[in-house]
Image 1 (spheres, rainbow, N blue to C red):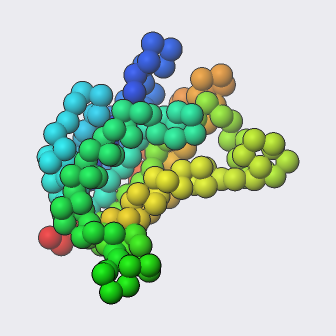
Image 2 (image 1 turned 60 degrees about the vertical axis):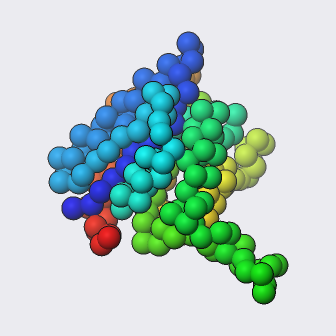
Length: 202
């Protein structure tokens, strides 16, 4: 089957030690391995080598990015990973420049990615309820979707020419958790999504 890299971008806090995201990572590892996929996991909080992570992205057919949404974005430790790993990979392994040329410096920004054919999936947890999204009557997100909020992560992947798979989200995980239902949805999401993912030839 395919090769899958799971990156756990959780920053543990005393009030939120990251157990749910760790559990989702383990469920993904076990579910995907049982389906025949080759799975590797990086836990950012445990430390990492930037060059090894670039190589892991090159190895993978699909990268799953698992993280809690903190202050409308990724946790700071995951942003640090992105800054260090993705910048290291700008040596031609993840992208060959930003897509522009000296002959046309004003066009084609963001088209220099070299990971054509590779896919990615965002899997996130929220304190916000599901009802806060996709509803113009809700004042905060004002009709915006989860993927609208996560646009910077999608653009990061697009910068490297990766293709998106459907995002998974668990909502209201602190005040009104429905963890077993979330696990069931996650398992079904993985089985549906990765039953159709093919291996990308090297």
